[in-house]
Image 1 (cartoon, rainbow, N blue to C red):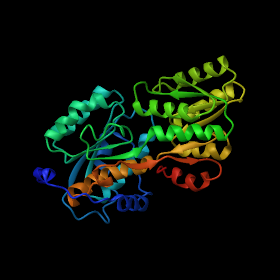
Image 2 (tube, helix red, strand yellow):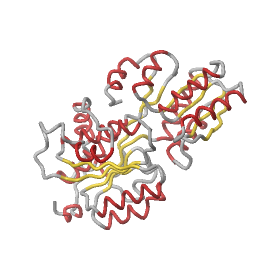
Image 3 (cartoon, rainbow, N blue to C red):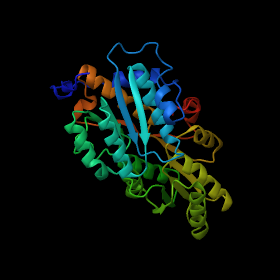
Image 4 (cartoon, one colour):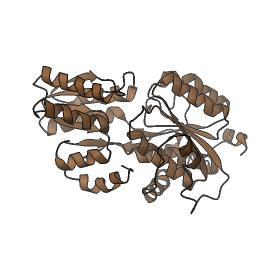
Length: 340
């Protein structure tokens, strides 16, 4: 690949429908579990129908914490797009912003053809993203950083407006009759998580308090939520910002008498089952599979057809959408495959 092609004048052509349709067609693709073997084998299962274009190497660098299954869904979508597009996908992650910046720098040093990155703590990545631009490597954002992607020089962004999602969540709490909620933040300093809770506060007619927990230590998450519910019996809703934390919160509710209800952002297989059973009231789905798929496919389209999703000026929003008992059956099948 000739690096100078990135500097050519690109014509703005929206490609959301094309990419989204391809993402749905590939929703059944499988995902590797991680590590070096996954990096080597992650794209080996879908040679049929592979794009007839020069091979690319794309680095996907996220702020995934160990054990956070949300990112398995993002990665599965990215791997499906990579398999279709004749892309070697190199995945790496670290919840520490400084370490994440170093992973991006490693990708630059390896002279990858494109980088997809999350911006949970955008200021920490400012310098290294400038280095990527200087090196002529296109960078797209996904999941976190909607307020910062353009200012940091990224080509495109795929994700959810967390403030809008939080505001919709607050209105939903009013609809279900909530009066007092606690919003559980599992990673301090993550701007997207803060925006979610701030959005809830903006529109919720009741009262809401932030509760900070250590998201890398689930027993500690459980004990902290349990202690809060015991301390304040007026809390009738626990709002979590990720599916694994919602499932843990249900244990805390059970231990404290079962009065409070749990609602959450994000889905996984276990959570859709909990909605069906009624132990989780509702969830916001931001479609992480689609985020991973569109980020990788967007880089391929940019390189091979000069496309900018959203015209290069607007983000491509993948959510929010609510999942509750009324529609969970339609989502559960895809969640069982690890794509929702």
